[in-house]
Length: 44
Image 1 (cartoon, helix red, strand yellow):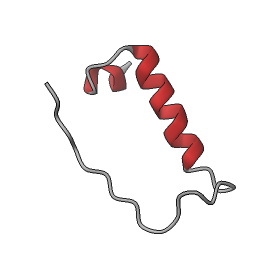
Image 2 (cartoon, one colour; image 1 turned 45 degrees about the vertical axis):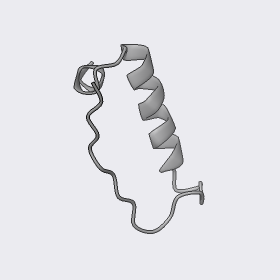
Image 3 (cartoon, helix red, strand yellow; image 1 turned 60 degrees about the vertical axis):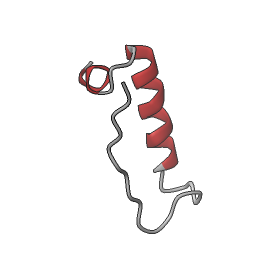
């Protein structure tokens, strides 16, 4: 619930995004490796 409020999106959208991020960070998934940088973006 906190994430959907933080990003000002529906709960379903926030849940979907978090699932994709968690899947990308899975240790068995080599698609993301090394240093990862995330910046804040405000739209609206």
